[in-house]
Length: 271
Image (cartoon, rainbow, N blue to C red; front, side, top):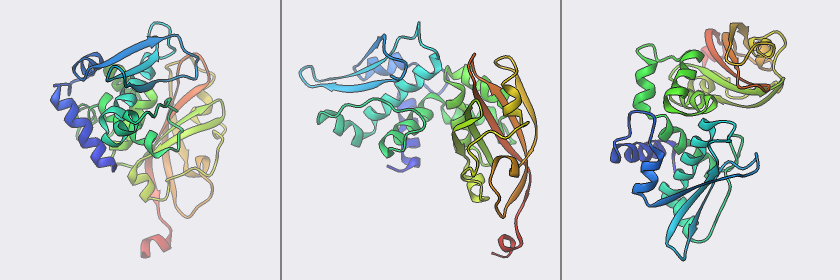
């Protein structure tokens, strides 16, 4: 299933249940679709699971108990991810055939899981709501991304992922732990300019992300960086602006890289 088809499907679900103004009522969706939501005390690595109970002819979604979960927004994203497996017809057929699974998080390489993530992002952060906040300039600062996460009752990482997916401007969202880059999302325009992947797997010294480690959670550190700081050497260069924030009490950092200036090589200009 193509990304645009998943986007249309999520919007159809939102329209059907009049859920375009966040936060999306997940209990209402489950009730209307006759899906049973069951929360419980699971290991930290458990995010969520959906299965089809044949003898009762119904779907069940298991998820971590909200009262004790590290992040309510992360749990809500996981539930939306499981909704993706339900609403995407091919996935639902696999579930009815007896397949069960556990969500793997953002770093999964599975096409099926990536499709469910895409659906979850579109469901939790309705496109219309995001674009309204992006305004005429089509840009969200990190502060506005965090506000979006709060408004939609989703995680900051998921809000950043959604923004990068919709942005027409070149931008990149990076999640790191300590100095180790965990994963990243690159807008289509960033990819088109030759910045679709990182050459470096470590957070650069002295950049806002590195400085954020010594700051209280929620404090946004920002400043100019060069593409040479984050990327390996390549023909394209860019002056960037980085915003970074420490999420929670640990060492997880969310960074947003946006473009201040872009320079193409002579080869690029002639192509």
